[in-house]
Every structure is written in C-alpha cells, then in structure tokens.
Length: 287
Image 1: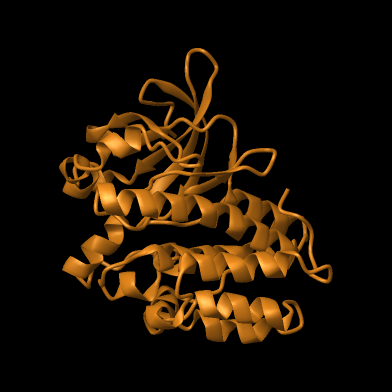
Image 2: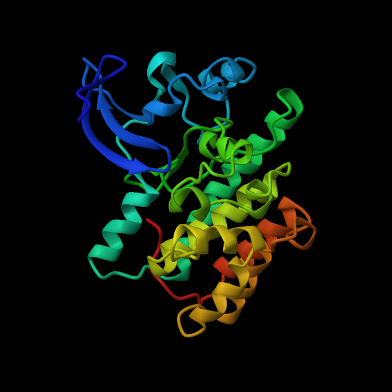
C-alpha cells in the first residue's frame, strides 16, 4: 500500500479504472484527493508532455466546482487535487447499496443538475481557450461530494489513457469499469463534446438512483452494449422503479447517436428543472 503521494500521507485508497483514488493529508493536516495511475501508465505521454497545453487550466481552473491541481509527479503518474474533505460518488453508491438504501430518482437528478452546471460552464470556457470541449474521462471516481452535497470534479481534460491504448491495440482490453462509463463515441474513437459528458452523467445518475450500473455483465458484454449505445434500452428494465418521465429524460441523454440527444444545454436544463419541480418525483434528496 502507498504510504505517501507527492509528500502527503495516504489515509485511504479506492480502486477505479486505470487509477487509484487516494485520500491524502499534508503536513498541515489539509485533506485532498489524489489520482494515481497504474504503474504501466506512469511514463505515458498522454499523462505527461501531452498535458502541457492544458496544465495552466488544471492548476487554476477558474470554474467553481473544478478542483485545482496542486501537485503532479510525472514519474509516478500522480495528480493531487485541492478538494478538502470529500467522498467520491463511487463510494456513495457502494455505501448506499451495502446499506440496502435505494436513493431513487430525486437524488440522481439533483446530482445530475449540479454536476451538469459545472461541466457546462467548464466546456464553454475550455472549448474557446484550449480547444477542449469535454472532460474526457468522467466516471464516479472523478466526481466528489462534500458533506453539504456540493459537487467537485477532478481530472478534467486528463484523457482516459487505457481507452487510448485500446484504440491503438485492440488486444489490450481494459477492465469492465473502463467501458462502463464510456459514451459510444469514445469507444468508437470519435470526437466528444459536452453531450458526451452529459451521457456519462446520466449513466452515473441512474446508478445513484438504483445502486446498480446501467451496463453489467462481462467485459465483452459491457463493451458491446457501450459500442451500440444500448443505455437507453436498458432503462426499460426499471419501469417499476423509475417513472416514465424520468426514464424518458435519461433515455434522451443516453441516445447512442449524439444528434438525437438534447440539442443544447439550455434544453437539457429546462427539462431537468421541470422534473425536479414535480411534487410527485420520488426518492430522497442528494443532500
């Protein structure tokens, strides 16, 4: 087990796709979150020299909700973000599942609204300044929550390195979670935009609602479902849990063809806010 990351004491680690998520503490007792990539990726150019163009944004993202990068150890694939005490969405989902608690639609949609605002603001800024229009490696380990429910996002514009390697060598197949949170365009190695991040948010929001992932099965099963964009079809298995208006909203965000998703962020938030105002929306609050 790691004892220190970038000179900070490691308190806990959690395994995510291609990287560990680590709770770390500096000498002053400040708590932060680190991403530590697997050893095979430590010298990977996508995690080192290729980030030089976006590094000024990572160090000073200027968008509330995007945690700033405070340490980066190139030789060890380590990135430490200034987050304060928080918990990953992956941990929240696991704890709810272990406790037998099903949060329901309200929690998932409130999460989606908060994270979606951050990602929309960030995309609008980075697309013009850095020609980067999406997070590129969003998953439940890259989204964090403070105790008050405030969302923080880490690793923006740090690519999903294991998927890039898979495209170069199809025999180098990543594990299940690497495919589980991929929009179809990433699996097929096509350009991404904000709708790609909203797609992944919908996957995560669904998982918050029912504490089960949209895509399940073997790695081959998950990869094929992700390639075909079958997420919206999977929602039909939860008709007794999710109201039709919630399923329809998620299904639109999860269309395999980006042209059939929400036409704009304004349309997305307008429909989402309308649903959140419904008095019959079931489930507990994300808070």
